[in-house]
Amino acid sequence: MRALGLVFKRMILRVIKEENKVKKRTLMIFVILAMMLNLVTLTIAAPKEKLMVYTSMKEHLIGQLRDGFLTKYPGVQFDYYSAGAGKLMAKIATERQAGKIAADVIWTSEIPDFYQMKAEGILEKYVSPEASKIVSPVKDKDGYFTPARLGTLGIAYNTNKIKNPPTKWEDLLGREFEGGFGIANPALSGTAMVSVAMIVENLGWDYIEKLRANGAKMGQGSGQVVDDTAMGDLKACIAVDYITISKIEKGATLGFAYTSQMLVIPSPLAIFKGTPNLGTAKKFVDFMLSKEGQTIIANSLTLPIRQDVPIVKNVGLVTPEEAVKRAMPIDYEQLIINKPAIIDKFTAIMTK
Image (cartoon, rainbow, N blue to C red; front, side, top):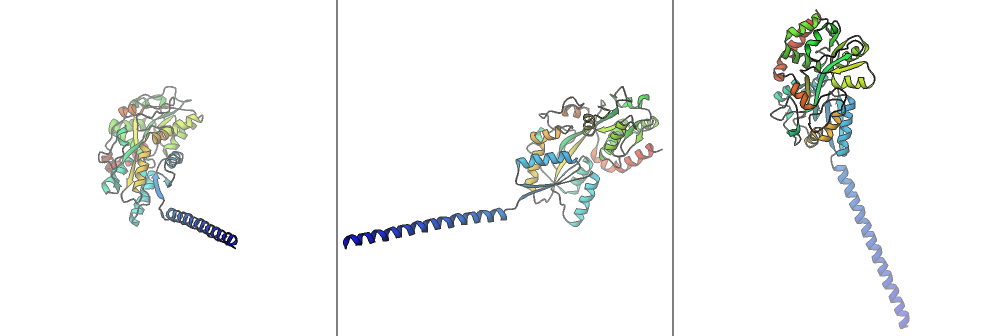
């Protein structure tokens, strides 16, 4: 009987032991499930970082910059709206009237617009740690906007029609360019408007009159006058660097040359005041000004704003330092006031 009792006792202890194991396993499973549920809840509840950029840059450039930024910050929901600077400013004006600007960041080449937005108090002050590396003829001393690209304009010329590329502005008044030099309409193109203003401020209205007397013409947009030159409808034109060089690389019968005094138009970047995504917007500004971001910009056949980022070689570009050294000066704040009169007078001269 004693032996039988011992057997039963061992069996009971074994059952109790197994029950304890089951309870422990069950408890562990519940703990794991609770932790997983908590993690899912936190993931759902945590707001995803967002960024909306308004820009006048071409799709391929802003697209590459977005991809580079998302590689570094994969958790950000990044959207952008690409359109002409005038259209963007009209959109912003409408959104302001409605009570909220939908964008966090703006990036265009219309420098007067940035001075205007700064004066109206709609930009957030931010000086990036990368800003000390910038090389630019334009810098906002108060830190409300920062150049992120050095856009340059040179002379695109049809290589079948022009055998002596211009090296100075006076060359465009010669017989070789007679009846065939084009400038984009400053009412349609922001870069053309600033270019005309620079020429007027540095060479005077007399120079515009002489261009017209030599048969110069007012074209359409900045891209169209380059196409007209490639087709032979124009002999040469004032042309944006990356637009012209990309066409040359695709086989267009074009050359590209800078005059001794250069048209250099930085493209500023700014954060809108009151954005709910201020932290992410600052990250984007930092990325844009970083060596990584500027390398993407340089590889798009235009000039970076950093000295330590190499330019694309053998396509006619100069270094950022050289561009700044040769840049025509202009008072952008005064240009805000003078812009309508400049457009009107230029149009009157070129259409008479």
